[in-house]
Image 1 (cartoon, rainbow, N blue to C red):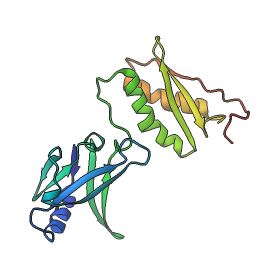
Image 2 (cartoon, rainbow, N blue to C red):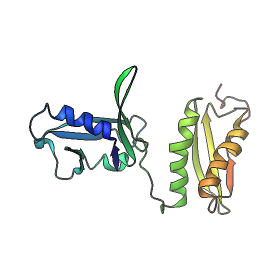
Image 3 (cartoon, rainbow, N blue to C red):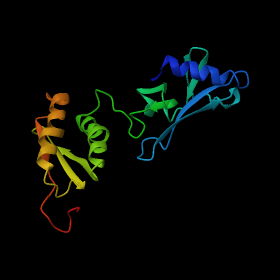
Image 4 (cartoon, rainbow, N blue to C red):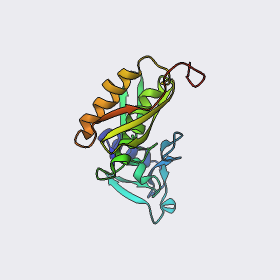
Length: 192
């Protein structure tokens, strides 16, 4: 579920040695599954452990994860890096904002997850977004673009060379292509 590098384990062990006996760490997500999701690590004294917490044992300490945060911390990584600028603890949780779907989930759910987890973060840099509207009977993912994507002159490149090529690589046996349902002509609906 969560991988903690050896350097981060050593860092936590050092910090915990200065705390009360039996203190461990808690890894959590605030506002899990939303755009405002934030991950954190805190001390977890023995009286703060809940019955439904997941205990992950590491070298010299345990990390506890509450039941609500667990699915959002799949594939999370904690590292402690030191460079010329100093030391920093990093926590990467790619599924904090969106719960990862199982490999055997319905096709719509897997494509929707891909759009929200992989495509939208890239489009957000340009003020854009994309939503999966449907998957047609003949295997095409129908997308609706908004924000900075609506009226963009590069939308064909985004759809064909970006989204479609990635989807075909990942789900080529199930998806035949991508169709854009957005009216990109200049008008009041367009984003400029």
